[in-house]
Each structure stands twice: as C-alpha cells, then as structure tokens.
Length: 195
Length: 195
DNA sequence: AAACAATGTAGTCATTGACTACTATGCTGT
DNA sequence: ACAGCATAGTAGTCAATGACTACATTGTTT
Image (cartoon, rainbow over all chains, first blue to last red; front, side, top):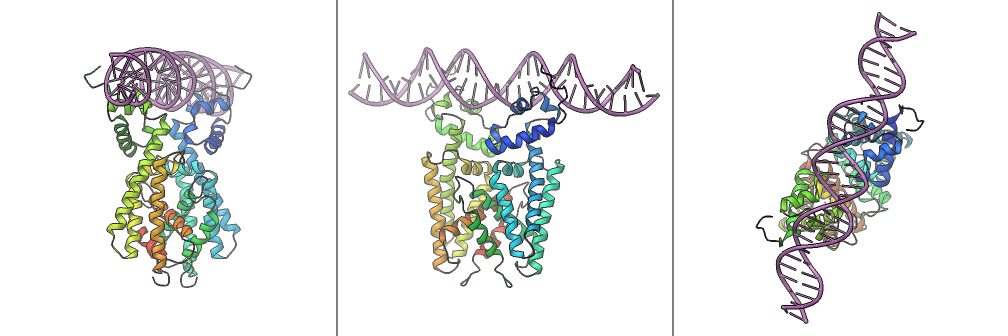
C-alpha cells in the first residue's frame, strides 16, 4: 500500500508501548487490537503474530508492569539510604506512586489470567516479593519491625500498600492523602520495642 | 413470539439479578446486555429502556453492591457484641468476605464511573463510611485505638481492609490467609495505651 | 374511550476479536 | 548463489456486541 517496508521490524515492542500508553490514558476497555494495529500502521491481523489473543497482550503488559515496578522499588530502596524507616517509606511510596500513575496497569498486573505461564510476570513478581521480604527481615533484625513470621508481615505490609494505592487516586475517598497515609503506616508498623 | 406477556413486569430487577450472578461467576467482560436480554426472554433492545448503556448497568450494580455491603457490615457490627476488638474484627471480616465472594463486584464499586450521579451508590458508600467512622470514634474514646484525626484513621483502616481483600482471593499471593491477616491487623491497630 | 407515557420489538450499523488462506521477506545450509 | 523454509505481514470473512431508530403494544389517566 505505502512504501513502508513489509516487515515492521519492531512490531511487538511497538504494540506493547502503544498499548501501555492507551491503557494509562484511556483504560483497559478502550484497548483494541485493531486500534493498536492502525496506530502501528499494519494490518488488523498483524498483532496476532505476536499475541495469540487480546488476553495475551494484557498478560504481556502485566509482566512488563511487574518488571518495571520491581525496578522502581529497588531503586527507591537504594536511594533511601541506610535508615530503615526511610527505606520502608520509600518502598511504600514507590509502590503507591506506580499504582497512582498507572492504575489500570496495576489492576491488570494482579488480575493476570495465566500467571504461571507468564515468565516475565513470575520473575518480576518474585523479585518484588524478595525485595520487600528482605527489607522486612532487615527491619526485624534491627528490632524496628515486630517479630513473627516475616512472610505474614510481608503480606500485611504489601496489602496495606496496595490498599492505600487503591483509595488515593483521583475520585477515590482518600484522594491526595498518599503522604499522610504512608506516614501513618510507617509509624504504625515501626512503633515496636526499638521503634 | 411465545405466549409470554408483552410486558415483562420486573425486567429491570431481573436484569440486575442476572447480571449480578454473571458478574460473580464469569467476570465483567463476560457481561453482555444482549445475553442478559436472552436470559430474561426479551428482545435485545429491551434492556435499553432501563439502562441507557452498558456502563449504566454496571453503575447500578455498583450502587446495589454498596447498599448490600453497608448492610452486611452493619449486621456484623451488631452481631459482634460490645467488645471493641471483636467489633473491629467483625467489620474487617465482613468487608473481606464480601470482597472475596464477589471480587468483580467490588472492583466495579470502586471503579464506578459517575459516582456523584448515582444516588444509591452515594447513599450506600456514605452509610458504610459512617459505620466505620463511628466505630473508630468509639475505639478512640475507649482508648483502644490511637488518638488523632479519625478521618485519617478511617482511611487507613479501610485501605488496609481493601488491601487484604485484594490479596486473599484464589490465585493471589495471600490466598487463604484472611483470618491471619485480620488478626494481625486488629492487633496492630489496637496495641495502643489501653490495648 | 382517547390520549399518552411506559415498555417491549425488529431491524440496522460500525466495531471488534478471532479465524483462514495467502504472500512477501529474510535467513540458513549446501 | 540459491533453494527451501520459518517468520511476519496482508486481505477477507464471520459471529457477537453496543448503540441507535422506527414502530408496536400495553397500562394509566383524564
């Protein structure tokens, strides 16, 4: 049709990048394979070579999301310095910021259909869990977090972070309260013996 | 076509009930207006008389969901007796149970598009917030919850409950840990001066 | 009983995801 | 160099869906 080469060359990446943008700006339900194909300048059936169906694209997005989230949390912890409270807060803040800037992606990440069969998702989620798990053990060793099963504490802390992320977005009951809620959370968890 | 009366009589309620079931059993994306019409035995355009578009149906479901959730929380508090910790735990348990049994509905409730224009949603959400707010003031007065802005504490507690609800379902990282997490949460919040 | 509002019907349209058959391109081994 | 083949794109089709319009039936009100 045009003088564009027959082979796009980076179609998969292009589709994913465009999909991530549409997801962020317009939500999942507005995400259409045909629309992505149009934006990439390929035929409506081309995406099928890279994603078996719509859900496969969403799963790929979820995998990339976990990878990025794990990166951002790791960077936040590293940048927070040695103080444990600062590290814990930075972790929560990174998590909440991610979820706030890209709520639709966050939902996708935790609603991914075939999590087991998604290597990148499993890797990213595993890395995230390890990061937070290590942080918690660190806090318990220095006595700044209460003792007890660290797995259980990790679940609770990650649940709290996700809960805060969920109510802090625009139009939600806690809009704009992210900082206050994070402060309260850190204080709540670290007011133990050595707190 | 059949000898069914021309006017269904309870079409709106029938559609809502059927939609709630489909939502619970198959998720939002499987919810189709035409399918609901077929199940109700009416023409594909009939639902339009009661719901302007698909989103309007989802919003109505969200409203009904908030009403039911507020009812269940109120009942749980009433049934829990006078002990504050028991009341707090019952509230969280009711919340988590609701979200676990109907995760898709829960998502809808917090993703409702035009929350302001949805009277039932606003009423139900308001009632829920009041219930939890009153409970928190009660806990602060008896010294079993830390002092401070009760609104802020309510946000944090409701965020935590929602966070727990989100990771406790099947296929989630905290599957089956609802009771343990609720225990930890109650202990965490009530270990103040008079705790 | 006439008018009218409410509620349901039938038909149409554009969009979409999924599928199939076909085609162009680039790579590999000889 | 090139034959063969895997990869990645194209074109066309189909059924399902949400949205819309024009019309028909029923119930209510005056």
